[in-house]
Length: 385
Image: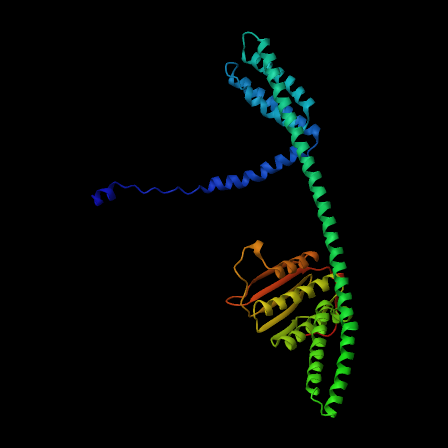
């Protein structure tokens, strides 16, 4: 039975598309595009003349087919084209010309008698077609204008929102700097003075062999730890290197401080020495690097971190690579706050932010942005750490 089925079975194959058909389509697409551009952008008088010529050609075809066969529908093509691309009044004029051409073609074909009622009905039908096409054209133009107005309003609103976001970011950054400076200049100095007084008291108690000397020494160590914590907080809020010497020095300082404070291998590399003149761009790039390093240590438990700044005019790319645990498999709307902060910072400077797994382990955070030549100032000595 299986052999019979095998004998009676038929293999169906989809025939390959002929090359002539594909070449014909490739050839016809440019022609249709040119025709569309001609009707849309060409002079109205020339387009109207073409429509009249098309009506005459249809009338010639009507004469050749004889009065017994009506090709009224074919007249609708030049009528619709003329009404759509020239206007309603021209469509009404074409309706009259179509009736006249139709009557003349029937007379030339040998019609025994002209039925004027049929001519009136043809004119009425053409008038209805003209009105429908013109009304559809006006509706589409109105919708297109509404879309343009709405698009312009949205672009204006987006521009205002971006300006507002930049202003908020600048105000936030000023407050961060002020808070960092206050921590560094006031609280750190106050704690330093307190540590000196406590150290004097500790030495005095130790000289008198008092039992409280050990407790006083403990107080000194606690105050010194508070000083370190305050300095780290101030350095997180405000980077003096970023203001004084630029982005590269600030990123190098970030790598050194991270290596000293967190006991991890953190290095900074740069392919060439370029100073970012735009303070907003430099600040946001530094914040992205700072947040990426903190995330790698706190959440990724990374032991090695590499901060890279690559310049290939007009592109500037900041990359932070670590060997931590990588990113969790979460939906986009469940992304962590750190990723959203970095993405927002990249958006403020027009950068493209990505965060992805680094092969088997670790994370690669990248911020790439296109910079203007006047925003970059080349320096003489390369800086690599």
